[in-house]
Image 1 (tube, rainbow, N blue to C red):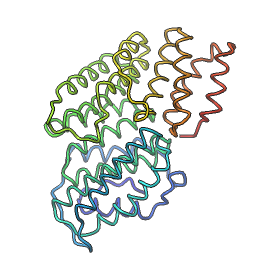
Image 2 (image 1 turned 180 degrees about the vertical axis):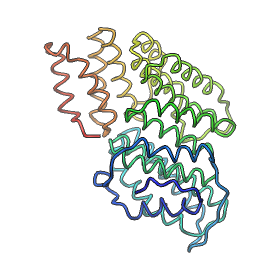
Image 3 (image 1 turned 90 degrees about the horizontal axis):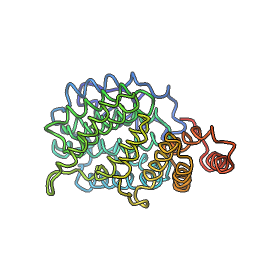
Image 4 (image 1 turned 120 degrees about the vertical axis):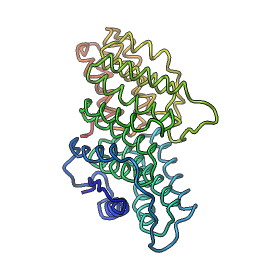
Amino acid sequence: MGLEFARDPVSTIRVPATYWRTVDRSRRQLISNGFAIAALATPATRWLTKPTDAPVSHEGGRQVGRSDLDELWRAADEARLWDSRYGGGNWKADSVTKCLRLNAAPLLTRTYTENIGRELFAATAELSRVVGWSAVDTGHHDTAQRHFIHALHLARAAGNVESGCYVMATMALQAFLRGNPEQAADMAEGAYERGLGHAAPRVLAFAKLAEARAHGRTGNAQAAKAALGRTEELLDSIRPGSHDPEQLAYMTHARLAADATEVHRDLADPKGAFAWNSQAKPMPADRFTRATGIRMAVLAASHLQARELERGLVAANTSLRILSNVHSTRAHSYLHDVTHALARWKTRPEVADLIRRTRTELPTTAA
């Protein structure tokens, strides 16, 4: 249920609207068979083959207007802000899920012109993508997968290749996080290639960064570094006044450096990780709380790879202080990985204390 990616545009209206209206909205109570990488094959193939549909209009009650669209865009903007500060488990995430059910779903079946319909689909695609990422962040990958598939379908109906590129790259990140880096690399590369000539440099950079992370996890240093280099080139190419989607404003050189640090941690290359980390300017902690906490956990792991225990403990303690206020299973997993790496030093009091506090303040959650 909710995994369909039909060929015809009419289903773009029916399938997500039906899913959002009928399924239990509590992500923790959703009955499903869990995340399945195979379920992404058809959506990815069909979008890569045909990323845009012909515009459609619809007759079905009240006319959809500008205020309706503004409300959807505003909800997505607010959700991204709260997600960055407090993690996907914040209370705002549930309100955005309700927005899909109570606001977006009815709008899809009302009256609108082709032009309004395109923007309606694009706004709803972004809202569904945001809800999906919040679900990833809290470990509810089954729910996330469905929202991403709907988002990709809606992006195609909107005739918006850039939106589809962003969604596909986000889906690649989920595949990477679920232990499927090879498939994630293929999806991210496909998103980039499809987006060429259509998507803004910042969107293409996001796709390349997702690809780099996937290659890093497979241990393919050459491919990972090539993707990082292309990401940097794309960010360098952005010019003032050019088209630049606001929802990807966080995709900066600082974000590149932070993720490149993680890529080199995965490559077991602490020297490379430290070099990239030195280029990562501090992001505003009140705006990017989760990202800052994750970055410190990655830095801690890199110090441990280099046998620098004291520096690793400093970074890990900083990460714990930050992440204790963030509702994110994904972010907490980074620090739990650090405690596993600390096992060889567990007889030392300061190490035992950090492990104990991590387990107490960041309890593990099934993902």
